[in-house]
Length: 247
Image (cartoon, rainbow, N blue to C red):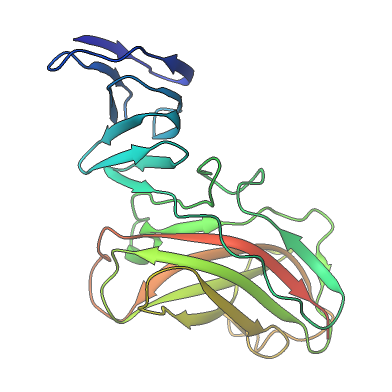
């Protein structure tokens, strides 16, 4: 076979069908792609590898291995390899004007899976085992001001987490502290819609009391949490469309 190494950057491959036992291998620091005649794009940054397959199929392997078919995308990071699920359904119409809105894959989402939604897993911070799986939304420079009756809506997809886990959402004011609320993960497969009241529902992690109308929010963070001791299982989650509507 033939072996290529991609330390960082982007590689586009258009490979003729390979004879049995003679694959084209493309190795990155995070994973190895085995090609059997296909067209695909591979992006590597040293810590993660993103694969988008145009024709044929590619096996992407790290500590895990997945077969990525045509039209699909996958991400490898920290030994985890995951297919991006199908695009999330659009958010249903909601009352009130839109205060803030974002689509997965936009700049600032961490490790986007192109063309699918985004997820990110990384080693936990010291003393914080639940930080293993975290996704940060784009920071809004001017912020959006919480209105009475405001509601946060987003779609999520998760895989690999044991029962009892929850998706914690942090709304971040200008001082980078956190107002937090939790969503118990729906165990059914597929995309799920979460809708949370903002005004009064989110509690400040520093003891300032609940989030109230008038506060300006500049960013969002989603992370997996739970009551079991130790680090969570090697799961992953995706966040789809996000919108905040006024009351």
